[in-house]
Amino acid sequence: MTRNIIRRVRRSVAILTAVSLLGLTSACSTGPTNQPENGNVEIRFSWWGNTTRAELTNKAIKAFEAENPNITVKPEFGDIGGYFDKLATQMAANDAPDVITMGGAYPAEYANRGALLDLSKVSGTLDLSGIDEGALQNGQVQGKQYGISTGANALAVVVNPAVFQAAGVSLPDDSSWTWEDFARVAAEVTAKSPRGTFGTATVLSHDSLDAFARQRGESLYTEDGQLGLGQETVQEYFDYSLNLSGSGAAPSASETVEKLDASTEQTLMGMGKAAMMLTWSNSLTALSKAAGTELKLFKLPGETPTPGIWLQSSQFYTISARSKHAEAAARLVNFLVNHEEAAKTIQSDRGVPSNARMRSAIQELLTPQGKAEAAYIDEIGKLKFAPTFIGPTGSTAVAEITARINTEVLFKRLTPEKAAEQWISESKAAIGK
Image 1 (tube, helix red, strand yellow):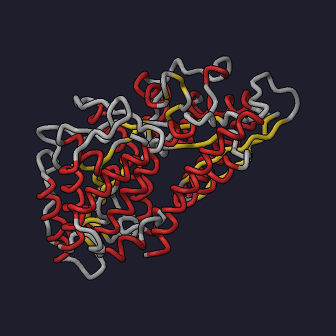
Image 2 (cartoon, one colour):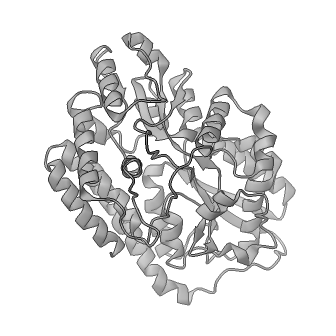
Image 3 (cartoon, one colour):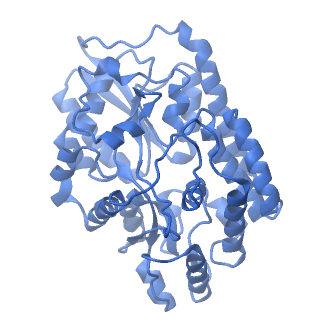
C-alpha cells in the first residue's frame, strides 16, 4: 500500500518539477526545425498501453517508414503506471520524444509551460481539415492547437454477462439505473460469487468524480479554470466509494490499492473476476481479449435527469517544442490520423477515429467489440450534455490528490467529510486558485 501511494506522490512531484524547469530550459533550447528534411532522420515516438497496442502501433510505424524511407521511428512505450514519470524526467533533461502521446489535462499542463509545439507551425505537413471540430477543440489550449485527438472516448460501465449469469443475478437496466442500483447489484453479485470475484472491479476514479459533479449540475473545472464543484459533492463521492468497498461490492482497500497500476490483463475484469468495471469505452476490446469472453458497454448510472457523461479524446498526439525534426514528426502524426492504412491497423484501439473518412474506412474491419465501442460513442454523441473544460495548469496534480485521499478514506484514516475538506483545500492550492 505505502509503496503505491509514494509512487503516485512522486509522480506528481516529478511532473511539477519538470514543467517548472521547462521555463528555465526553453530559453536555452535552439527550438524546433520545421523545414523539409534532407537526408535520413530518426524521430522518437512515445505512448503507453498493453502489448496489443504496441503490436498495432509498431505495425503502423512500419507502414509509415515504408512510405517515408528517409525517416526512422524509434518507439518508446510502457505501462501507464510509469509513463508520465518517465516523460517528466525526459522533459526536465531536455530529452523528450519528438511525438508524445498524452491524455487528460497533460496537453494543457505541458503546453502552458512551453513544452509542446504549436501545430500551426507545421500546418503545411499536418492536415487537420478532416478532423471533427469537437475533437480539434479538445486539443486546443488558449486557442492554439497543441494536440490532435487519436479518437473519441467516453466513460462507461464494462459488464461481464458471464459473471452475472454464474451468480444468478439479472443484468441491470442501464437506461434508468441509479448509483444506488449499481451498488446494490454489485454487492449481490459479490455475495453470490466465489471468493475473489466481485460485483465491481474497482472503487471510483478521478473521472467518476467529474461525472458525479456533472450529474449534479456542477463540473470539475469552470471555463476560467476554477474548481466547479462544491464540498458536498466531493463528500458524496467519498461516501459512495467507502460504501462500495465496505459492503463488499468492490474489493477491500488493500486489494484496491494493489490493483491501482495493474495492466489490463491483471485487472479483475481482465481476469474474469468482476461483473462490472467503470472505465473508458475504448477499453472494451482489450478487456474482452484478456477476459476471453464477450463483454458489454453499459451507460453510467445516474444519468437521468442530468447527464454526467461527455465525449473526450481518449489520447492526443503532440510534438515536442524542442524537436529537431518537427517536420518529420508532423509527417508521422499526419499518417496516424489521416492515412487509411494506419486507421485500418489501429482501428478503435485509441478510440473511435476523429476523422470521418477514417471511421468509414474501418467500419467493416471492426471486431464485434470495436463495433460496440463505435455504437456507444454514436449514442453518447446524440445526447445533450454540458460542455467540458480542459483542466488548468496544476490540474494533473488534482487527479493524484483524488487517488491519494480516496485511499485514505478506504483505509478509514480520513472520514468522507474531512476528506472532502482536504480535497478542496489541496486542489485549490494545486491549481493556484
